[in-house]
Each structure stands twice: as structure tokens, then as C-alpha cells.
Image (cartoon, rainbow, N blue to C red; front, side, top):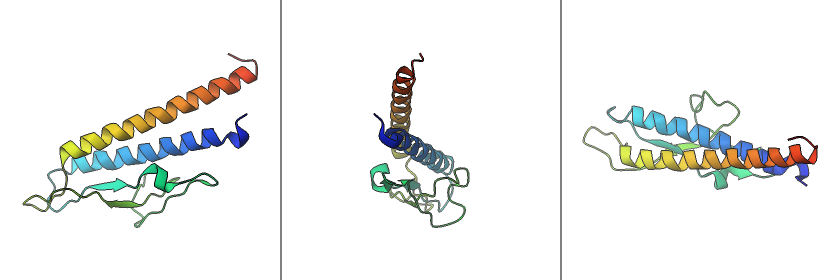
Length: 126
């Protein structure tokens, strides 16, 4: 049925990735007026996910993703126009990325809930 619950592990990995990405986006928005600050983001989930071992991510500095130690993500400069004070955060772009990350997180939760319902039904529970 759900061999080795691969679907569940993928949904869990997507939820973790989306959560970590939302944290970075929130930090970018919080530093929108900080001189010299550059927006940061994670690589796409599809690039990072390795189905055999779950979510395998790497980080460049120990300070990255302190609140999510189970995922070490590659954090990179997210690009964007550099302002006069050296700040590279576009609030509009960050809000759009936040919506994408939230949708990915909601999708992961939906998959997890559907798979849980299937497992409960197969066990004769409601």
C-alpha cells in the first residue's frame, strides 16, 4: 500500500522545508530596512529531496536554521534589486515567496492527512 510510508516521509520533508523557508522569509521581511542586508532563501524542495534518505540539506554556517536542526538547508542570497543603503530585500517578492511556501506546507499537510486517513481506514478505525 504505502511501501515504507515513502509518501509520509516525503510529506514530512516538504513540511519541514516549507517551515524553514517561511522562517527565512520572515527574517528577510524583518530586515527589510537593515542597511547591507541581503535576502536569503532555500533551494527548491525538488532539488534538495532525495527519496531514499529523506530531506538531505546542507548549510554554510552554523547560525543557519538554528530553530530547525533536523534540516540543514543551503541558504543562498535570494537576489533582488539592491537599494541605496545596500539592502537587497523586496518586500513584495518576499510576500509572494511566503505565499508559495505556505501553499507547499498546506499541500504537505493535506497529503499527510489523506495518508493517515487511509491507514486508519485499513486498520478499521475512523
